[in-house]
Image (cartoon, rainbow over all chains, first blue to last red; front, top):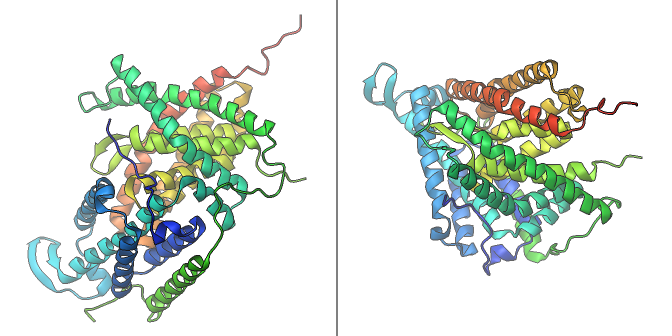
Length: 276
Length: 182
């Protein structure tokens, strides 16, 4: 079961040096902008900027290739599904129809549809570098303190920190249980019927869940004994103070967000229409 | 005095979200491209019934967002919000079940399944597609079809596996009437 997951990659770069809170704020601004806009020019501009930042971070493509392949595959399937379900969506949005060639019935290829797919794909590409960078350049322990800094109550921030702390442990336990059950004949692969596979999933999931419920008991007792949650505030071992670079980054990010929203909604439509 | 969340709820959220991530990543059964039979929702339902609506909502939200982030490198917010919604409402209405009393018989099973089916139907068939259209401007018939498929498979999974989990969990609790006077 060689499954890789994204994790913190230690490096020395301008992006790594920023405080976790800064990166979180930028990530949120970035995804809000990318989520709301459909303006092709803004998406292209954001894409160029995110490639520049990616270069600055010194993260190599080879280090995240497995996720990229996964995303590209997902995007491809999503595009195919959109076309199968709604080949005229572009025409509906942009209001004109420039037919390139006919296939059958309502399935033809129009410039509008191609442009619509281009925009959807672009929207994805804008978010990917920001999200990837946030994950690989922020240390997990710093993540919780940055959540707290941007206003999330520290108890909830601490839950997130617990999650990140226990993902590797639970993954190991899952692997142990899965191998033990597979040795006893529980097959999750395509060779079994679906109902049988669900049953086999249950024999793996059950022990994992019940051993974890015990774990919750143990950890919460330990935290209670150490007086967790008695005070209104707490400090964080991994918090980093804001520096000049942080303020500059945040201001730039917020300005970019506002700018992109103003430009997007200026003419009353989210879409940039080249066919008009 | 408002003490906020109990330590136990906080830990349940943390560990619960971690399990959600692992189950979502490794214990989902692919049935078609991009479509999985998820084992995460039965688990989410169990946690929501045991630890209440806030834990259910946050396990769904944190778990789903992190799962998306570390496996796809981006977060599909519209479906993450549905996980929050499902966790919250199953937790809210399932207070009536009172699983800690150790009884999860046919009456409770029926109540649980009516709740989970209606909450998930609203979540997958209404909330998810509408958010998809608003945020991503995807074609309506595509997202509604996806929503219906997700609703059917998740309601069935929670109905089978979720009920089973709750039955087993109830057996580990000592029943309220287990002591008798001699």
